[in-house]
Amino acid sequence: MRCQICGKTAATGYNVSHSKRHTKRVWSPNIQWTRLVVGDTALRIRACTRCMRSLRKEGASKEGAAASR
Image (cartoon, rainbow, N blue to C red; front, side, top):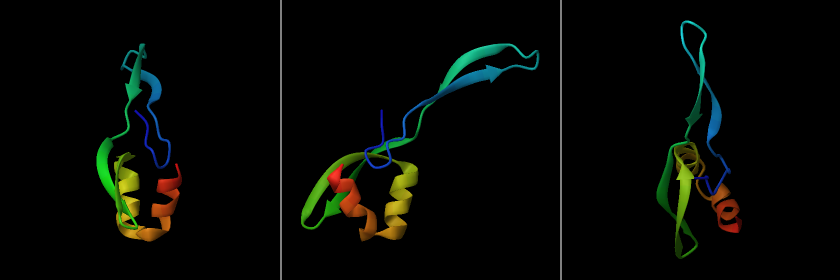
């Protein structure tokens, strides 16, 4: 899954045990369905919780950017 605002996707890497054994793993971003109101239109988008928090704090400055993606 991908955030429709910032484009954040899953990150890959390794779990490293105490014996330094490496096993592959994936860190998934916290993607949620949310409703974004642009003008008089409500859009349902997938956004990471960081972007949801930023939208709540900044307000209208990012709404236009999200609608254009």
